Each structure stands twice: as C-alpha cells, then as structure tokens.
Length: 146
Image (cartoon, rainbow, N blue to C red; front, side, top):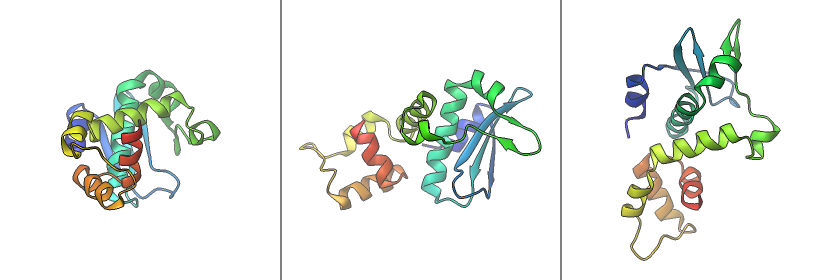
C-alpha cells in the first residue's frame, strides 16, 4: 500500500525529520493545512506504521488536531501518557486500528495465510508475512489478534 501517496493525495504535507527516540511522529492542522511529521531515525517499517497512524488521526480526529495540536516555537503534540501506554486512550486505539487496516487489510491477510490456520508462534511464518506487508512482526501479531 503506497501510504505516502495516499496521504499526499489528501493534501497532507509530510515531513521526515530526526526526532527524539521516544517520539515516533506528530499530526496537526495549521491554517487549514494538514501536517504529519515522522521520526526519520526510526526503522522504515516503524515509519510506515507511524505515517498510517498519524494519517488515522487526520481522518478520524481532524477537529481535535486543529485545537489541541499546534506549532509555536516547538511542537505541542498528542503525547504518549499513562492512558496511551495502557492502551485506553480512544484516539490512539482508533488511530492504531485505522493504521492496521490500511497497512494490513483483513481481506488480504486472510488470502495470504494458510488455509489450515496461522500459527502466531511460528516466528518464521510471522516474519515472512510481516515482510510482505512491510510491517513489524509485532504489528502483524497485534493485527491478527484484533
């Protein structure tokens, strides 16, 4: 899935830049223009998931991005906090689900898995399938369990 092309086609500006290691990306809308920033220091698969995740925020939470996230002398972003680390922040849950479906559509997953089932403990098969979708093995496992 050409994630960057899809995002750009929606008129969202992308920027890859070195960021602090604990910051994967950011999404905001300034003067009516959507922006996504991605940590250029992260693995390409992680960057790809981050792009899809931040795109999810634009598609699902645009009203929030115009009021809560802005650029001043630095970025104030939707930071990870106790809620997001516990997986209970509804915005993060929705953006993750959006990203997972965009990058690993269920109908494609089902056609690529063995007809007899798929063993999540088979690291070799998980890694091979993850490579096909250009995602991490952990993202694939999470998707298959969702």
